[in-house]
Amino acid sequence: MKENKSVIYWLFTGCILIFIMVLVGGITRLTHSGLSISNYKLISGTLPPLNAEEWQEAFDLYKQFPEYQKLNSHFSIDEFKSIFFWEWLHRFIGRFIGIVFILPFIYFLIRKKLTKSTLKKCLILLGMGAFQGFLGWYMVKSGLVNRPDVSHFRLAAHLITAFITCAYSLWIALDLIYPEKKPAAPHLKKILQIALLLLVIQIIWGAFVAGLDAGFIHNFWPFMSDGKLIHETVYIEQQPLLKNFTEGKSGVQFIHRYLAYIVVAIIIFIGIKSRTIKTTVPQKKGIQSLIFLVLLQFVLGVFTLLLAVPLWLGIAHQIVAFLLLGAMTFTLHRFSK
Image 1 (cartoon, rainbow, N blue to C red):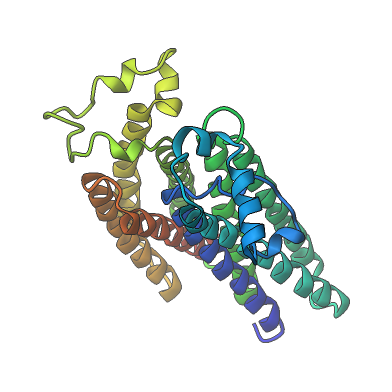
Image 2: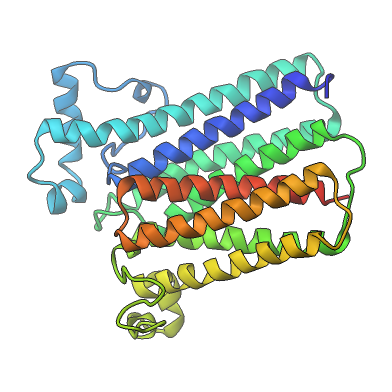
């Protein structure tokens, strides 16, 4: 721990910055700000427009694309500035994360503070960060052609990559904090791995819900509407049938709704199962945090749906999903060999 203190702090700083990035990204999505900057300039795009002429130039560029032409043709330049801010901030944080990861990495490399194993993991981490940046622009491009909205598949890829990058960064830090052999419980580890997989799938479908604005329909609970657990549009909205669950608003919401029950059930089962074995303090705290966060996330999800996705609830729901994945990563690490 002492030998790797600076590296651990670096990795945790990265986790915090990715958390902020996801938070701002959620606000960007929910305020429909993501297509306000329709070009990508790695260096010159770091600063926002600084005078009236530059603002007008940015606004004129925005006018050339579908979002303005089909949805926001009534926008004044001041209204444009409000959505531009969130997208600019999101990209600025992304650039800052790149600097925070790369410069200390070079320093640790020169000072030989990274073991061969940690070096390999950090190279993977840097690759994931670069891929995340690419996915961000790839996502934006999908909303600049015909539809004034980004592809929900690309949105999901962009979001889940950010989540997984943070989880992997946390895992590397935990490897350094706990260099000794970790106390293992093989049966519980397997269940935790299944729970992690289900959680990742649930987050992906949450991104589908956000990308398709599927949270604005069927705003009832526990039924989808009129006493129906499954609304008829779940299976007739798209053809072939399976497309309903990846491209239909009702089908996507259906998967997200009912997978939530499964995620809650498996985490509660993990809590019950852990009482039958001897656990360490970190293991116990990890499981307790999982139970607390999954129940909180479930309640937030219900109210987000019932209230038709108010901004603050949508953001809170995304934040807790992020924390839940972090808690899952920590707990699985503590139960792994």
